Image (cartoon, rainbow, N blue to C red; front, side, top):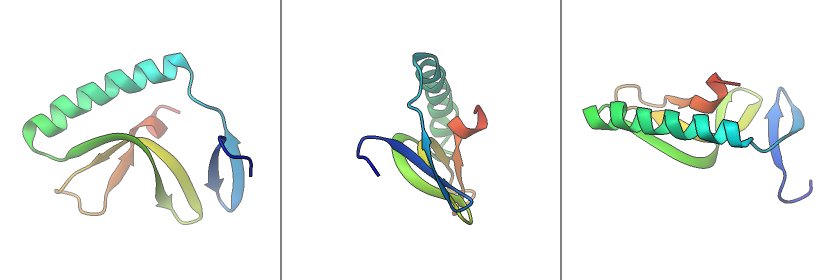
Length: 85
């Protein structure tokens, strides 16, 4: 696979995914700021904003952007950007 491209493994198939648009980035930033204020401000968990691979289901691996985790839900990670795809 060529370097510099975004890929997802979905049900055993490798798929190239486009980079986010400016509009996607704007929405992601606003959502991140709201989540940080709400979640971290109340000590409910940690919000990360960095690409990292995450396995959300068997045979499906996605590059995760904004991820929400909580000590109240061990092992739980929510790919917030996927909610708005």
